Amino acid sequence: MILRDEKERKLFDDLLCVKRQEKIQRQYIAKNIQSRKMISDLQARERAAFARCAREEEEVDRIPTMHSNNVS
Figure 1 (cartoon, rainbow, N blue to C red):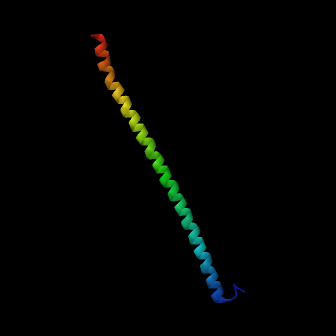
Figure 2: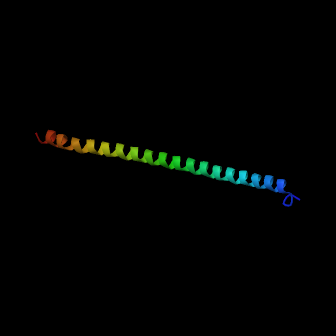
Figure 3: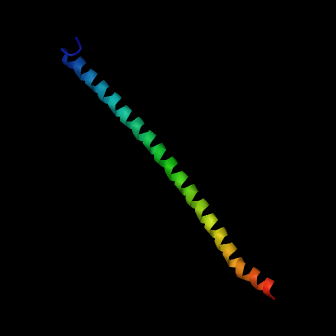
């Protein structure tokens, strides 16, 4: 039997340890990919918000010049 033989038990324990480590590594990689996607999405939303803010500022800056052209 595997559990009675010292060498076989050691090999089996090592195999289980390797499988656990591989599982942990796969989970880490999956979380890392998920984190990178979240960061990328956040950066894209921030760029869109800054671009929208810049456009709004340009529109606000144009209002006084448009108003002064209509008054004269």
